[in-house]
Image 1: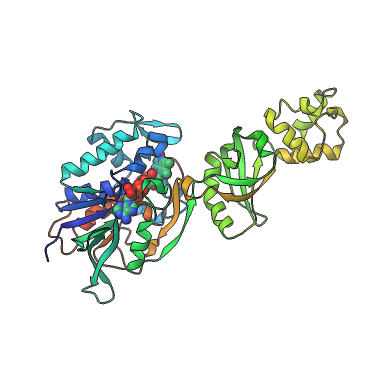
Image 2 (image 1 turned 90 degrees about the vertical axis):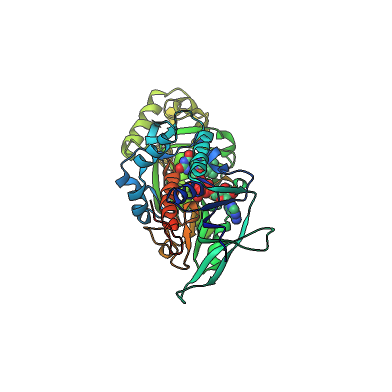
Length: 430
Ligand SMILES: Cc1cc2nc3c(=O)[nH]c(=O)nc-3n(C[C@H](O)[C@H](O)[C@H](O)COP(=O)(O)OP(=O)(O)OC[C@H]3O[C@@H](n4cnc5c(N)ncnc54)[C@H](O)[C@@H]3O)c2cc1C
């Protein structure tokens, strides 16, 4: 039966574009099928439209930045690390710069430049891209190895005959930001051939909290604070940095980092809290002494006035209320026990979590295709012959800072190379 391509790539996001280009550069005839009217829609909005493509940190430290899948990525990073990725884009004319936290962005601050470069890479290598093509099913036959089916192509919505190929790479992304096209289609495609899907959950997602006082502090951003995630009365994780109070709850970098574990706990119905330490540089004794000093110095002032050196203005009534004190009481009149309550809140401001903002607001999906069912050196499926995986559809999720795109690109590089060289594709890997 005539083939439509050696390699079919499903999904034209970061991973799909790079995998397609790589397979074509290795000599394969490649067909890229994207369901949107254009490729790279999520990439265009990544990094607030600036696209944080990777991180400049030591590649040996990268695995630690993935709460999900770090170990699995060793081989992928070995073949395409951050330096190689930066060079790859430089060769495509995309100059990059490094910002705070080692984040790498295009000098143009324009994510569209990155998308255009990837499209050019794929096109120049000979990839045929068809947009507006939603893959609905895998075309599967009994394999040479009776234990495993063989994937010989895909079915596209509205077409009766399958598109045939020697290998298929699934790069459909996760389930986060579904408006960009990543609606979790890859999970059902994987299940067709026996893949296990680790429950997809939103990660790097703002959290909802229940506290009447949030209305008074919405928009307030705190720097150099610590936020700890408590699950069923036990501290699970703690992060230092910047956070933001919103009308619905909490957001900002350290909250997003906590959100992966928080979302999982909330999903399981566990009691989940974030506790904020507003003065993490001080020991509890130092915090108590500092408070005593401010209260003494502000002796004649109201409590509200005496706390102005210590706290952001809008948080003062919140702490006073939670400590069951009155803002107009004289600072000097506070009893020892009242001072103790206030000092405790300075370093342990509790917020009960009630939920998260869901996939619609999540940067990444935690969960996905079980990594034990994928060869880390080739991204080949262990469940079906002729099938490869790349990008966020896998059970991989990183913290912010360029790690998620690096994982998408590195896995795509391997998948493209290996799919081009898959048995039945008469091409050598380049
Ligand atoms: C708002 C936002 C900002 C982000 N910023 C950054 C950042 O700056 N740095 C970083 O490292 N990470 C960032 N990320 C995460 C990063 O963008 C993703 O991890 C990455 O794009 C995943 O690439 P992917 O190719 O696997 O999936 P996607 O980019 O999601 O691409 C999947 C593609 O597959 C297509 N598709 C899906 N199903 C089908 C189907 N059935 N048939 C055909 N096509 C299909 C989709 O339409 C889509 O085009 C951000 C994410 C979001 C949501």
